[in-house]
Image (cartoon, rainbow, N blue to C red):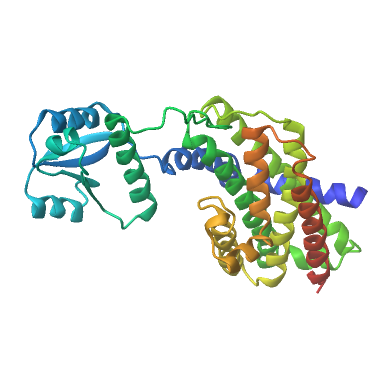
Amino acid sequence: MRTILIIIRKEFRQIFRSKPMLMIILAMPVIQLLILSNAADYEIKQLRLAIEDYDHSSYSKELIADFACNHWFRIAAFSLDTEGNDQLLARNKIEAVLAIPRDFEKNLINQQPVDLQIRLNAIDGATAEVASSYISSVISKWNGISNDLLRSRFLYNPELNYKNFMVPGILVMLVTVIGIILTALNIVREKEIGTLEQINVTPIRKQEYILGKLIPMIIIGILEFTMGLIIALAIFHVPLLGNVLLLYLYLFFYLIVMCGIGLFISTIAANQQQAIFLAFFVMMIFLFLSGLFAPIESMPDWAKILTKFVPLSYFVQVMRSIMLKGSTFITLQKEFFTLVVMAVIMQIIAVLNYQKR
């Protein structure tokens, strides 16, 4: 135990001795959280809309007025030039075109079918789908065809605030970066400067050395998470409905998994450049298979199978469930035991792969 404490003290002295590294550890994640949480916003605001009104009736003007008064839309053009409006779509000057046909008012009064045309830039399919839904919603409400018997309740995020969805996920991403990259670079750096050779000739057992490296990274990860959580609650006003101690319990085992992956990378990388490339390779796979940006349910079957081996997917689910739903341990026990098993496996692999040579 005394040996492990000496290694831990050495690690913290080495970190605090390097002011640039200290700034990277403390300041960079905070800045990233503040920037990414505002940038990663899939909500459509002020959708630029072009209107082609071929009817010029009182009904068409009322419909246009509803779009003009809606905070989702900004009418960017009134024109009957179809090709010109399509050019605006092509140059990304507008996001959608609404074409109101001739005899629009007449057909509505006579209860005849009316075909409104919506043309959207669908390069970004998700944005186009949401924009189409917004436009259809305004038209339905204006026409009075919404079902009054249907009442919708938005649970867990009643204001549909996208930051409530993204901030917990981005916080997980930053903790993952700390866990994998910092840990991976830690041992590799000692290889390059020669201190690892000195440690290898000492009677320190490799289990003690790995544990002495692991504990400081976990402490730093918990500190980073705490800073990010304070920002999420104080600045972004993300709710925390569940037990905060339960959140830290999952965080502890998740950090063990991430640090284990980082330690494994450090044992197979010859230098810091290799370690960074390997760490980013793992990070990119984890991020896109985690459900952070796209729901796992919409992925192909082979990708869904891969997500079961991605620890990030479990902790993202835990974060959102505890913070937004107030979920308990009983609800999330599958995620807990999965992270525990992953933590044990990764530490065994890291210890076995580390050779004192």
